[in-house]
Length: 245
Image (cartoon, rainbow, N blue to C red; front, side, top):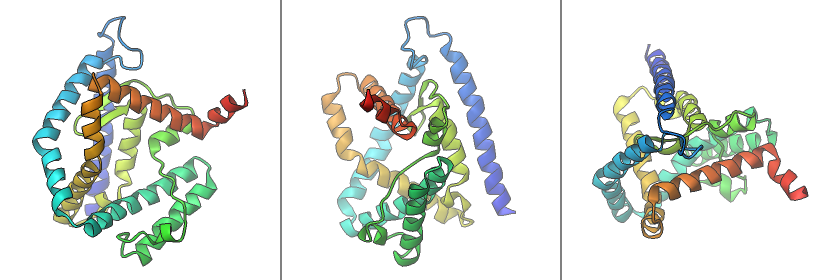
């Protein structure tokens, strides 16, 4: 019964996410005619970012800093390799959905090699074998098939996103291998470690952002949207068409 509980929980989160997003989009109608067309609910998003910044300053950043300072480099590398290995499997699925057989095969080979020969992914044997990694997510897959990005959203605890990418996160959460673990303490510990490891990798970038950006919110939003648009254009071949022109 436990696997069914996990799937049911993921489904409830997915449906709940849809309801929340619907409410946010409707709320965006009241922001007035001068709102940024890509960010129609900017006041709400700014409030969420202030909340996220508060949580980050009070909890995530201090914990990530301690983790970075006291954890041996070898252990940190193993942690990063482990979570990257899990992403490789999902990237393989997305590459297949995008009809990209080479990337699907490479990412699946990476996952297989590192899982079986790299001690569950702690060692990155695949990179030493020069098997290329292509990181892909379901939001990109939706964009590949023409689904528009929708409005910009700042998600509690998770940060910048769009309506399309948030739907993609809901789908990906149902395929997260960590979510399928039956031992709850181990599963939650790995979730926490993934969050801390990800935040530790962003410590330097976060410091540079705080120093460089006059308006951190606008800078983060514009950089995120430009990056995602560039990724989708590359998937759809529009960058190649622009080069030819």
